[in-house]
Amino acid sequence: MPGKDYSATRFSSLTSITPANAALLKPVWSFSTGVLGGHEGQPLVVNNTMYVVTPFPDVLYAFDLTQEGYPLKWKYRPDVNPSALGTACCDAINRGAVYADGKIIYNLLDGHTVAVDARSGREIWKTQIADLGQGETTPMAPLVVKNLVFVGPSGGEFGIHGWLKALDLATGHVVWTAYNEGPDKDMLVDSSFHPLYDHGADLGLTSWTGDAWMRGGIPVWGWLSYDPELDLLYFGTGNAGPYNPEQRPGDNKWASSVLARRPQDGKLIWAYQFTPHENWDYDANAEMILAEANHRKVLVHFDKNGFAYTIDRATGEVLVAKPFTNVTWAKGVDLKTGRPILDSAKLTGASRGNVTDICPSLEGGKSPVSAGSYSPHTGYFYVATNNLCMDYQATQVSHIAGTPYIGANTPYKPGPGGYMGAFIAWDAAAGKAIWSIHEKYPVWSGSVTTAGDVVFYGTLDGWFKAANAWTGEVLWKFKVGSGVVGCPITYKGPDGKQYVAVYAGIGGDWFLLSGDVRSDDPADVRPPADFARDLARHTSQGGIVWIFGF
Image 1 (cartoon, rainbow, N blue to C red):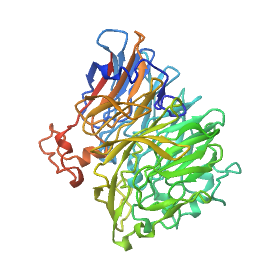
Image 2 (image 1 turned 30 degrees about the vertical axis):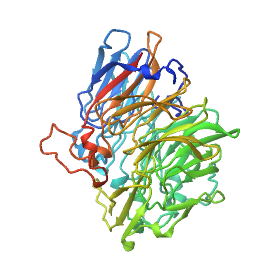
Image 3 (image 1 turned 135 degrees about the vertical axis):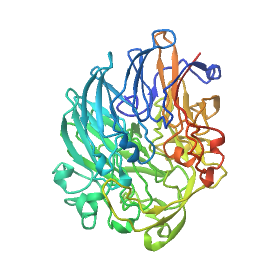
Image 4 (image 1 turned 90 degrees about the vertical axis):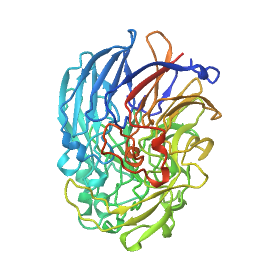
């Protein structure tokens, strides 16, 4: 599955690669996907076959790992509506597939979910789940629990009405739809809903003014996790729309929140809002990693708002909330109320003009794209972080279905310290960083950690690195040809050896911000963003799958 397991740990029990021998890693295979674009997500290895999903047009490859050169077994080319390219917010990416019941299941950019026979590449079913006309696209990686496939939309910048859907694994039919805002009946809320910090009926309605909730955004485009013992499905929600918070007074529940639902019927059990009345585009779509801390079953989340949360995953009680990067918008989190302690000078809105030096920027202290990992061996969480700040000038904006609904100008600037990113190890029980590797640019890749005490991550300027999971010492690095915005994996090959795989293909927001990185289009000579003017000197767009081994 996308996060390796239901707990989304991205932890491998393999031990062949260690701090003692990682420097001997070398490339053993590479493949061009034929697509220049942001290669987010991760390869998937099942039964000695590697499955790779490209950005738009969402081609699915299957490679035979038992034969020399890993030849292609089959290729599935779906029929994808090209108009989705004009609707996708932040590049036409895909965050990967999931395997279940002999099927490879993934989303297409144009609002469809498909199931493909893992052996033959034959399409089994295809279901429309989203509405392009409303600004909904679907690049997220599904999760399968029992007989259900869980999917959600992007579109927070288009004023959608966010939701999560469950599809029948066998047929693709929609079993239930639960909205993330609005009246209780639409949110599948009944007497079993017990949020720890909020009380009352129709919280997804009364925390808004007028009908603003109907175009409030709150997408589900990140990662999902599941606790089989508690029978709870966890996922984060995205920003409220528009970016001008004065157009949507109130807490705006349940934007920028974590929701815990029963998978079979979608009933909401608890919810917690990281950033009430979100002012800064601080989505909470990042992964919810399930672990234990101080003998409690917890959920650990690194939010765009710059705080790392350790939460009791049975009740939603916040146990620890500490900043993991430079934060200026809030002074801390009150553990009694669960609410951030705001710096009123950093509140935004059209009437406030240009508000300066807000940290982190709306790219987040950590991007939800950059899935972290957890090692039960070290007890640490491994996270790609950003050290960017911004100025924020909100403007009044009108909503037209299917068009951007934003209303803000938000130029970025480097944060303090002379670096724009770091890869860190985090102690979630104590709420502190153990070590940090500073990088010149923001770090946008996911990570994978192993029982061999090695952790892997990539950089925007095209390096793939291995570090000692205990100390942060960089053990090895390799230039992969394009920036890394995907998530590495490690697996045991049919020869019994351990391998590591990763995508190289800068994209997402960094395709938009880096400037001249697309040489196949003579007209695309956009200037780079002021804060990272030389990034395009180190990377161009790409689309390569790399495998490393001994």
